[in-house]
Length: 241
Image (cartoon, rainbow, N blue to C red; front, top):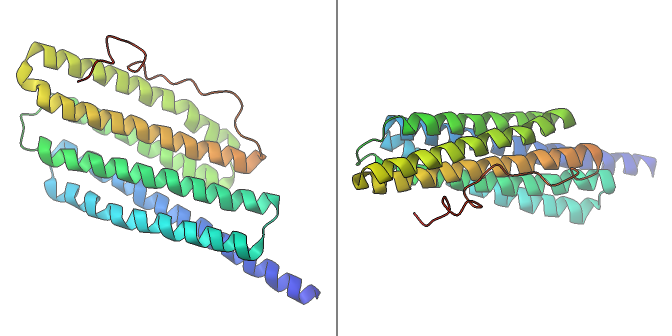
């Protein structure tokens, strides 16, 4: 009987290692999607933007595969509490990664449109810098997951405030450009939606970091994270663009 238990435990460990390896592979694809979407915007590279759009299919397929495998592990292995946390965390992380992939795809779609328009000075460089910050947050969140590093996960959560602040600044700049010259309105609307997508990516990365803390401690992060996105609460800024 002890040999059977050992065999079952070993098989379960392999299952856990397998789904955790998949989530890291999926995370790598999403990091690349953020990077390439931002680069295609700055360089007006429509071919690269198209690669991001097509690459999202692989990210979607990985989420579906991960969910199926996680469900199989739960049904077949009936994991104990600590192991169940691992499986549930992977499922939640994959959902957030899939959403970041979607947002990267949406960013790439607008790149194709913006490539045909007059460029707004400095805007794409600022957006790429904002996207790079989110990309680094995701890299650190995945590193925190590998190491079960609660401190690094909390650092990622705190850095989301910087992304929110960058979004607020860009939002005001786009409003100024539109007010100064109505011919800028269409371009600035697209750029604003891209900025908002990047800001939302930061929220999903934060959710991943929160899962790492849950995994490391067994508890959800205390308190409610204060959002630094002022545009939704400021009547002057929340007007429909």
